[in-house]
Amino acid sequence: MNFKQIQQLIKFVARTGVSEVNIENSNIKINIKGNTKSENSQVVQQPFIPQIQPVQPVESVQSPPNPTPIATDNSVVTANDESNLITIKSPIIGTFYRKPSPDKDNFVEVGDQISEGQTLCVIEAMKLFNEIESDVSGKIVKILVDDSSPVEFDQPLFLIEP
Image 1 (cartoon, rainbow, N blue to C red):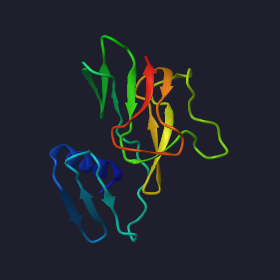
Image 2 (cartoon, rainbow, N blue to C red):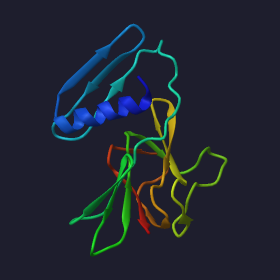
Image 3 (tube, helix red, strand yellow):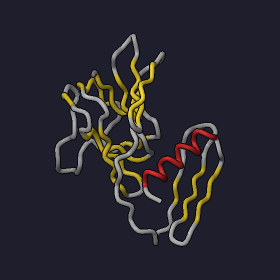
Image 4 (spheres, rainbow, N blue to C red):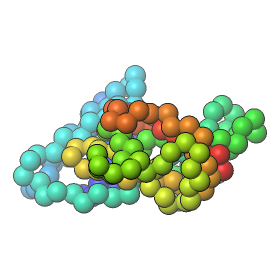
């Protein structure tokens, strides 16, 4: 089972409202606990499991109320008649970092022009650093999360003007 499949399983548990899912075979054990009040999920793996290589996580992009969804591969881009700002949301639970390492510069700053596929930040989850890439080109209008802060699934991270 790869990282992407685990993410999809977490999202499925969150959507369906199942309280708990346990999967176990000879080399992996996964326990996902859903919470019907919020979309928090937890993945627990045994320490003897080989390290899973980071995979580009699924990104969800959305704007404020009255959205009109436009589907792209593994993501949702949402447009709004009142405002053309796009919200990039966290695809996973973890710790948000604006830099690739403490001695490097931030990936992006407010006012930066970005292109589709450009890395905006990393989110550390279970000792894996997952690069979060933009699904749209545009200008960073606002960064909604402080560096080294915990983030929840589907939490807004960036506002982008396409």
